[in-house]
Length: 82
Image (cartoon, rainbow, N blue to C red; front, side):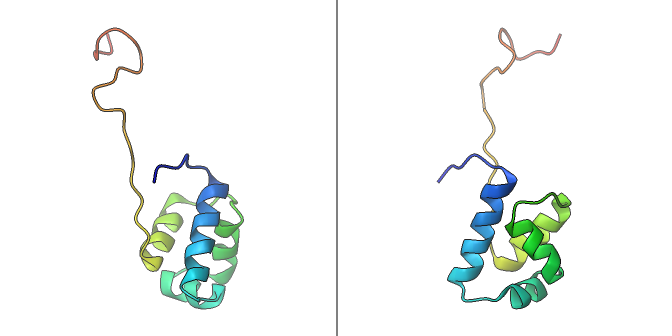
């Protein structure tokens, strides 16, 4: 499934995954090595360091895939910058 990524969408995904695993915020935060307050901020879509997001994703066993436009030129013309 490809989803446009923004903080609110990612926070909801994390919250839904945590709830599906029947974890409280306190337990999930402990698994992830972050505070409960930090997990709440992430689930609300607030700004946090990317390293914090990675800790939470890893702690909850969530994979994040990045889709890049392979063989597509985003600037037009050739694939060269100059």
